[in-house]
Length: 122
Image (cartoon, rainbow, N blue to C red; front, side, top):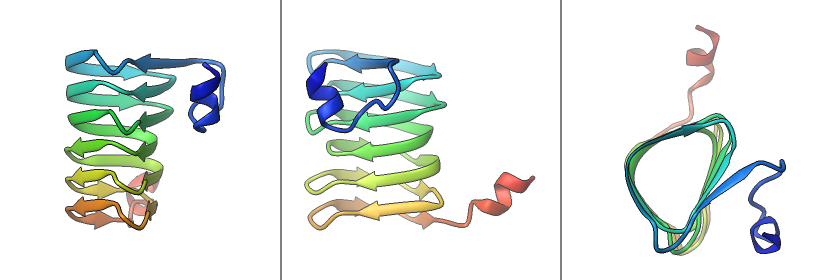
C-alpha cells in the first residue's frame, strides 16, 4: 500500500485498487478513491478521485471529483474539480472540468469544456 500512497493516490484512508489482472464489465460507483491497474468497461461514478495507472485501461464514461490518467481512457470524463493527463497516457473522449492539466507527451483526442461553473450553480 505504500506504493499507492507514494504515487499520490488516496489522500484519505479509504481506497480501492482494481489489480492489473482484473477485468470489470459494468458500472462502478462509490464514495472513496479508486485506483485502476486493470481493465474497466461500462461506467464509473465516484464522489472522490479516480487514478488510472499506466497499466490501466478504461472504456467507460467517468463522473468524479478528480481524475488522474497515466494509462488509457476511451470515454467521456466529467470531473467537478480537476482532470490531469500524465505523460504517455492516451485519452479519447470529451473532458468537462474546471481545471485540466495535460502533460507533455500525453495523447488526447476530443473536446475540452472548462465552463462548468454555470452548471454547478443550477
